[in-house]
Amino acid sequence: MKIISGIVAVALLGGGYSWKLYKDNQAATVAADDSDTIAVAPVGPQFNADSAYAFTKAQCDFGPRTMNSTAHDKCGEWIIGKFKSYGLEIRTQKADLKGFDGTILHSTNIIASYNPKAATRILVCAHWDSRPWADNDPDESKHKEPVMAANDGASGVAVMLELARNLAADKKLDKNYGVDFVCLDAEDWGQDSIEDSWALGAQYFADHQPEGLSWSYGILLDMVGGEGAQFYQEQMSQHYAPDIVAKVWDAASAAGFSAYFPTASGGAVTDDHLPLNKAGIPTVDIIPFYRDLPDNSFGPTWHTTHDTMEHIDKRTLKAVGQTVIQVLYSERS
Image (cartoon, rainbow, N blue to C red):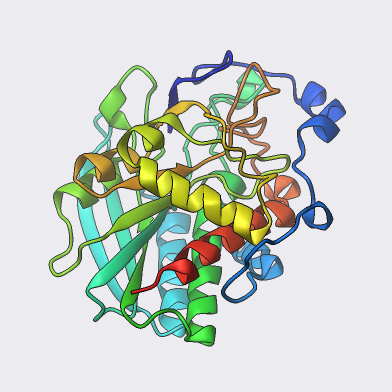
């Protein structure tokens, strides 16, 4: 993904930042922990952050899941196996997509359906590929190294897996609602100067929506496990899906995580939600906005070799996962 615009100065792809500055000032940017939050009207099961953390690590254990790599393919098989173990129905979309540099990317979108017969459906999605170049790393000698993508990829998939586990174990979601968890591929093989080079798997999904499936709305999870993350209301989400933005941020407040979900606007982002919105699926992007990092509002690990498990915070995973549970269990037919 890349930033289109923001409400404070932000860096373009390749911009630098001070890792030490972030660590020295982290206390000023870390959202309040669970002890500082008050759940107003919580519904649904408890999201297990330890489980989501373990799912994040399991993906990283394969190595960087860059397109056309063995690690990518093996991780895809593992993701499918986990969703199947919770009783979800699996579909895949395989496509050879052309990257901006002419590389043919062997892409697989993974669609895991809970309660597949329900006519009213909600889409929850995240990308599962890793960026092949750490081109925002403060050390320029590492710009051609792949990104481990613990946060920028694995965390979103991990939250979806834990959500699927919750739904399967609880079995109390309104029976008239179904949920489709979509792992979108080929998101991060992009170049900032070429708008359509990002979110290739989402573009394909939007143009080839699976037969028999349609959605009331969608929620995109992107970089939802980082230290110090807060999730401001992304501007393209506000433009295309203002009612869903209100729904999600209200749910965060009801679940007790308003400190993680400020109601102010963040940046406008090119991400997987844009093709979905343009295809008529109103979709919001839950994505961090670091107001206090003037060089990089996506956070200090974004597109660097520092995007590792060391910088995954269980409290952030909990805040996002419990918020999505609140959204899903607040739906009533």
